[in-house]
Image 1 (tube, rainbow, N blue to C red):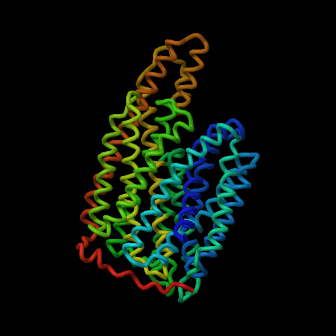
Image 2 (cartoon, rainbow, N blue to C red; image 1 turned 30 degrees about the vertical axis):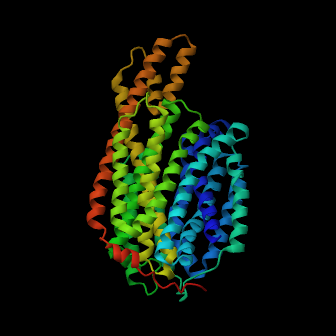
Image 3 (cartoon, one colour; image 1 turned 120 degrees about the horizontal axis):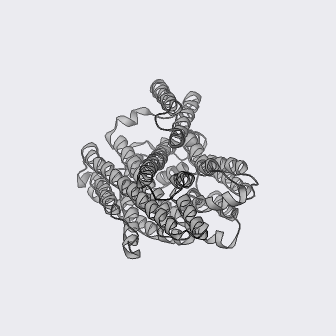
Length: 510
C-alpha cells in the first residue's frame, strides 16, 4: 500500500511535467503569451525543481520524510488550483514556479521512503522498477490527458485536474506512509543549502537561456562561469563540513558517479528526442494534440517492461551489463530515427516509441538502484535528490542543446533552399519554426498562390528532416560513447555478489 501511494505521487508530478506541452498553443490565444512566455511556462517548473531538489532532500532527511512529502503535496495542489485560473501569462509562470517547489519536496522523498521501507536488495530493486515504470506512465498520461481535456474544456482544466489528484495523494500519504528521518539529526548545513540552490539554479537558468541568447554570448558564458565557481565552492564547503548536506565523497565511488553519468546521458538523449518527436508528430504527421498524446502510449508500455526487467536483471546480472544494454538499445533506436519520413507507418512508429521506454527503463532503474545502494540509509533523501538532479539536468540540457542544434540546421537549410517567389518577410517568419512555415503556406493558399505554398511546404519539410536526422545521429553518437564509458567505468558485479548483497542497515525510522 505504501508503494502504491508513492507511485500515485510520482504519477502526479510526471503528469504535470508533460501535460503543459499540449496547451501551449491555447495559451497564445487565451493569455496572449509570447514565445518567451511559453518557454517560461514550461521552464519555471524545472528551474525551481532543479534549484531546490538537493536542499529539499537534505531537509526531509533531517526533519522527517513524510512531513516533507505532505508539505510538497499541499504546495503543489494549491499552486495547481490557482494556476488554472491565472489571467495573465505572468501569473501562470508564477504558479508553475510554486508547483516546482512542491515537486522538489515530493519527488526525492518518494524514493527515499521507498528505500527505507524495502530494505532487502531484491525487493528494493522490484519496488524501484515499479516506481520507475510509474514515472513513465505519468509522462505519457500528461499529454494524453491534456489533449483529451482541451477538446472539451478551457486551458486551465489541465492544471485544475491536478488539484483533486493531489488531495487524494495527500490524504493517502497521511494515512499510510510511515515517517522516517536521519536518526542523528545533524545540524542544518545552511551554507551548503544556499550554495546548492544557487549553483543548480544558475546552471539550469543559463542552459534555458542559452538557445535564445546564443551559446557563445557573454551572458551565457558568464552564467556558466558563475555556476562553475558556485559548484567548486559547494564541493570545498561540503568537503570540510562536519555535517555536510551532500557528502561529496560519494562521487569517488565509481558505482555512484557512473550511474549518475548514465542517468544524465539517458535523459539528455530522451528529452532531446521527445522535443523533436513532438514537432514531427504535430507538424509533419499532422496529428492533433490528443492524437499526439496517443502516439506516446507505447513509451509507457515500453517503460513498464524496461523498468521491471531492468530491476530484475540488475539483481541477476549486475548493474553494468543492464545499464550498458539499455544504452545500446537507445543508440540503435536513434540510428533508426535517422530514416524517419512522412511515409513512416504507424506500426513502425509504435515500435520505435516502445523501444524509447524500454531503453530508458533498463537504464534508469538499475542506475537508480546503484545510486541508492551507495548512499547510507540515513541520507536516502539526498541520494534520491541527486538521482532527480541528474535527470533534470540531463533533460534540460537535452532540450536546450538538441533544440539549438535542430533550429540552426533547419534555418540554414531553409535559407539555402531559396524558394522562388517567396518574399523576405515570409522567409524570416518561416525560419522561426516549421509551424510558422505552415502558417505562411496556408496564407498563400488562401490568397490563390497554391504553387508558392507548395514550394514553401516542400522546403520547410526538407529543412525539418535535415535538422531532425542530423540531431538523431548526434544523439546516437553520444549514447554510443556512454555505452563504452559505462562498460569500463561501472564496477563489475559477480552474480553471487549481486544476489547475496546485504542491504545497508536501515535504522532511519524515527
